[in-house]
Image 1 (tube, rainbow, N blue to C red):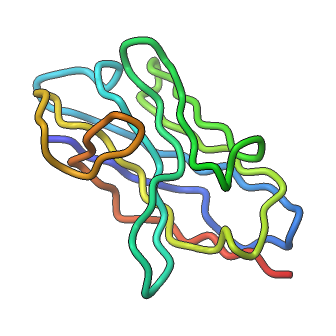
Image 2: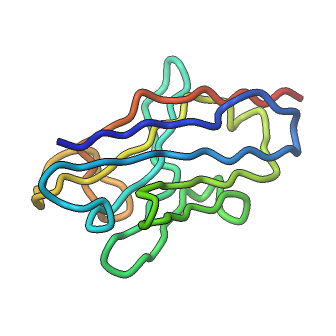
Length: 130
């Protein structure tokens, strides 16, 4: 069982910054062993991957639209995933979801950056005004 709880969403003006956090827990394993990521969804559109970080080597992968502006990181001691978002633009407005791969490797789920994601948080709203 994987549980993910996001926090840190809110409203900012264009050019501003926000940091999202995701508190994670997993039964029968440790959070540090899971690759994790952030996704977002705008009403009426498909959910899209934003950033992910692998467990095995800490490598990161970003959607082209956020490269250079967003940074994904994790603190395994705190079982927490972060997304630092700078230079926010109105098009970044969305519900942001924390995601994790399954503790046992599977080849199904939502793919992003070479990882299949199977577990989701409840989402946190980010609104950027112009």
